[in-house]
Image (cartoon, rainbow, N blue to C red; front, top):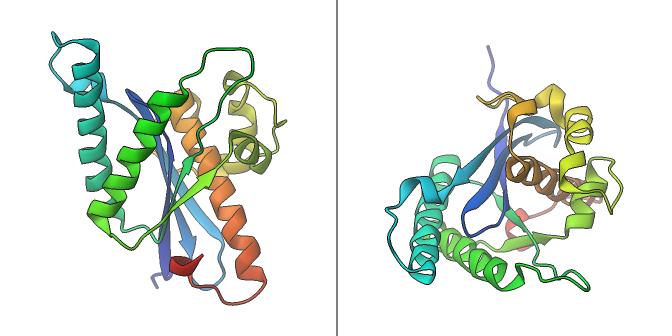
Length: 194
């Protein structure tokens, strides 16, 4: 059987404990989306407890950075995206910790390839990419993700059992893919220069 030339994209739902990661495989000649895998990484399961909250958060972020670096080397992505930081009106948000998480994602990407940039995808852009309303809540995304990506999902965990972070990783990845597909349709693109 002939192998189809392909490349990988990686998308990340940032967090200071649970991080959603999706790997999308794209056909290099037709730009078709061939498959997607997703997992939720839970850092607190992998560190010892008994530290102050700030020490523990740093240890979780260290673990996330280390695991993401390993994932980048394992899958050799041509492009990486993360959900952009956001602030909610009239509510306390996790904006500050998300900034720290994105900084660690950038550092992990730099550990892999210092010249690779990080694409940022807004939550609204991600939701739109799978056909959900831009104001949809995280717990309502599953049917949209299944409809848009279920036919190419190849992960070890059943898609219906994925946590919201893994689903968000898939949604971010679909938005990145859509953005790059639009550029590809306009003519040859250099993913490293976009």
